Length: 292
Image (cartoon, rainbow, N blue to C red; front, side, top):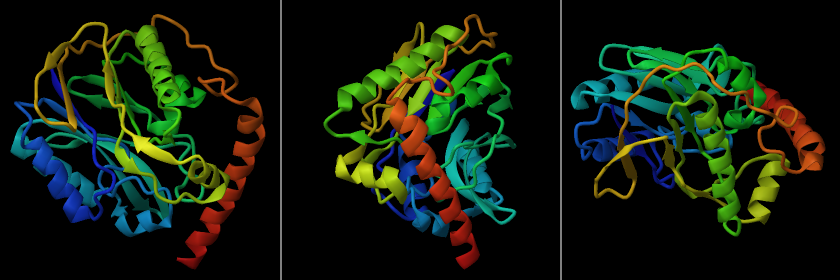
């Protein structure tokens, strides 16, 4: 299967502009079978209330656009977007072809002040096998693993809108490699990490303050993790292409977590700072909905 990942410029804003921009990249891909975009690809990654202005309504616009792209370029497509449904905003990702949407994944641990959180499923059944999708932070969490560990999978996709300190790019790459290689070894199927590049916009809360203080930015680092592969040569900076055989496999190895986290990290930060920030964020989200 000819798989292409698009590492998007997060600084391009506006739904129409971004759809045109994304299509301009897809149109240059040589015979794609599957095109995968990052987290919140349609609006761009904005971890604040501005993103509500770009919300789809029950996935209608994203579904229509995705199927149009899939028909025009004869491929499957994976797309990240913000959705408004039943009075709440969700961080979502879908996979479609020209005929239908095969499934929609919702980020369980979305940005607390901006999106509705919950425990959502992570597997999309497609004609090329079951695809596990862990959106950004979910990929590090035990809930994602628990929801897929007994499934037969052909592919694992981690769409990100991830940022890191510009001074710790090596640590960012090491963490990415550890997470993705851990899942590659456990399931024996390709693991795909897709992230955007650009400025990180304002994020409310303690996390947002720390990110600004440490000069966080979106550094890309998109990568396909496979045991064997055939690179597709393409002169397009935003793109990587691989010709990969997809076969459904069952898990062959357990994954060990530190509590609910795959990366041990700073225990004080995880157990105290982050929990406080999430609690405050959920409260802000509820209040913002009332004011809307």
